[in-house]
Length: 493
Ligand SMILES: *Cc1c(COP(=O)(O)O)cnc(C)c1O
Image (cartoon, rainbow, N blue to C red; front, side, top):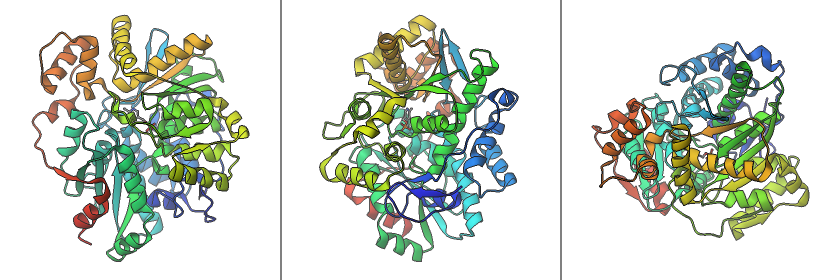
């Protein structure tokens, strides 16, 4: 299996190369040259556990890893760092299925991929006989940063540098990052939003001169963002695994189609579900749920991507994104693998802040359905789910559930549906408590967390409990156009 750029660079690279580089030379994203197919009957997968399904799926994509290396990566990733031995349990609540992706060390779905990425990256270096020190550059809307810091913490021959929007993450998210220990970790707040951070990181990746300077000092850059194919492929696994759980519980028949609802920001998580569909997973609709930054929802409904709008800070900060990187991979698929077209659209976006796809591509968006939830709806949905089912969801999952309710009302589609639950409510105590029971005076975050634990009857997750007494280690901030010089200082180049 080889990988190529969405923007037409003619080189074909191995999975190790694609994982290490993160972004292709021409600024495009790596995509597989063809899609592997799930070639065993689903019922035969019922006895397989999460790790076995992970091996089956990932092995089809990362073909230059030998079996024992890949097994090792998987064993080291999905171990007791996860508080559920199912890794990604599927909760049947009324006639809904919540796929809880937040039982990893940082309590968001980013752990699903970022607990394996460092191992894949190290193995890639070994496969390619690379001796350089790998510098992981990461832009985060709140959850990737902490998950990547945890994953790369004290991994030898790596450094990790995280840029987050100083005013754009929740207090718990920020505290999780700035208290990160490990001698190879760096965390920097920027005076911009996530889009600024992501743009800055991408520019640094494509800066040939800077990369040459780094290379002379024995450094190479890589990415922990979902632009890295090494993050996307492990995310396919939980969709396949949840389908098998439904089958095992006899909630569906073999080959019965399901819907999947994904609260969407950078379009990574929902793209992984789309890739699962391309591999043969029986999926009816992929439901893209946006928050008030509803640029993706508009795109899926009109074929026009228009970022010329106000960036809003919402209670679901990990989805506060206007320029969704991974959409480029979808454009590539729906254009019948036409890199010229993709390149032109990306150019239009950069120059004009808007592009429109052609009719043929629009028709291929049929796999998707999209809507969005306002701030009010997001908060009232948390309350409704709590009142109706005594189940507490976070703000991002609430966006997904709210959009799913709208979908049900509009379409009457009763296909069994999985809702991707992307974060623990304990990461967003203020919004969650405010929506369920705002009958309190000003409480600190940790008092809110106690209250949330009482209300939900769920023990405070260990990583949150430990956070209260942690010391702040990182307090760098920088202007959004000074990211490169921050890196220069850290690496002393
Ligand atoms: C990152 C994130 C999202 C958005 O996922 P994308 O892959 O960027 O679309 C949604 N919810 C939470 C909690 C997240 O951390």
